[in-house]
Length: 123
Image (tube, rainbow, N blue to C red; front, side, top):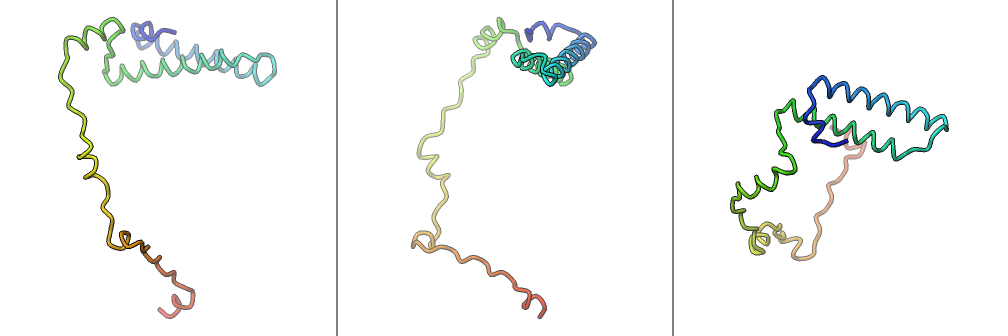
């Protein structure tokens, strides 16, 4: 199923399409469990179609308008803004953690002592 076709449908048509796809998916899963079919590719395709419908419904809820394939190249060429330069290696070095004095000498920190039952009773 093409996403562009889905984006051109109304909300009611999208909900109807979603119900139809879920029904088909249910029937195929039922047939698979009964051993009547082994069409895993159809099940996978239907699951992806259901996901596409959910995505388009959510896009409409949020008011996100994704440009169609033909408009992507035009939008990219018309709105060409210079991208910020990548960070240099020197900037990456400063982000590394500095070694502590104990770590520099090869010593490790001592683990915290656990309270025993006898010490807990004293308090």
